[in-house]
Image (cartoon, rainbow, N blue to C red; front, side, top):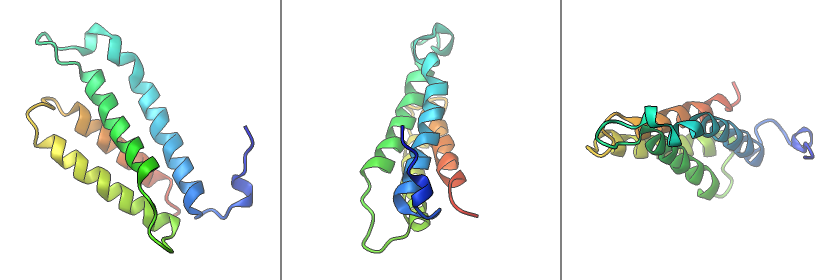
Length: 120
């Protein structure tokens, strides 16, 4: 795979989006084995791995599908996506369906991964 990040400035929107996507995908891959592992399923059948994966899928969808505003810089775009992820996290935190916080926890992890790529 060609590394074209050297030709883009460090705060470039698409470069930052790609870096954030890579970090969130890496977290999703760490969670992937839990989806089919019975250890991560409660006695009532609640699949923590599946709900965690759902959180990562939501965050990835927001990163991929959110359109930048005209003239929006990379850091501002990612901060806006973080705010969207936070809104989704808060919705799942208040939901009885996400009984242990697996989905909201994954959304939290994705949010921190996105924030990690912001220039200091």
